Length: 293
Image: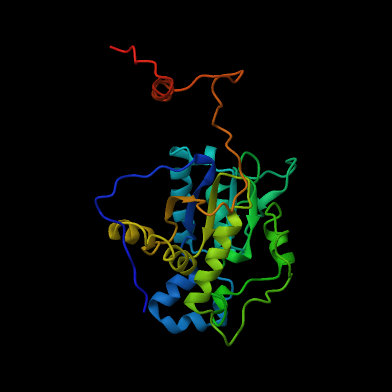
């Protein structure tokens, strides 16, 4: 039986060095065709017709709404990297929200998404004036059984999303998804923690992650046991389609190797310059009376 010990609700704020923190902007994909069918009948998730589910027209409207928010809030200028689960609905959401403007033939760059990718009826999207995009298998949805959570081959995706980096994905075919075995919640949570730990190997400090509701819920449920119950609840609540939530993760175990970039050493050249309270202590040790009034 698990025992959860919560921090005293009267405890105040805490401090942590900035260079041991990262800001994550977590996004659940917009509405997919599987969300609509599954809401009507949960058995629909077993339908082969929902293989690698794409976004609905409403889903694309949700993407447009979030894109406007990302730009009006200034997030578009601060995000250094976009990580996406390599499934159609997450990549469509990622490039629609965080990608560049419309792509025009002849641009000196590959498009993030070609026109009409994945039954989208959408124009091509440019990779100019936006962060790099990286596909990572660790942040996929529950693996197995549901065809909507099975991915296509990477070479198929590369044709649809030419400017997304798929280099971290080792197998062209989906060898993780099993038709008869559904990944357990505990296994998904463990994979989520592996993903969080992997983030510390990245140099970027502000990262957007476009992923799935199950992945987010079970990963985030691993956090917050040292917080007030209200904060724990805020961390772990389920995401709506195309919801964005910003969080800060802290490296308390020295997993990262980053050094401080905004700190400044002070007096240069270095030399004796003790704070007043230390100077007072030194004077007392030497038997010199404090001359302060």
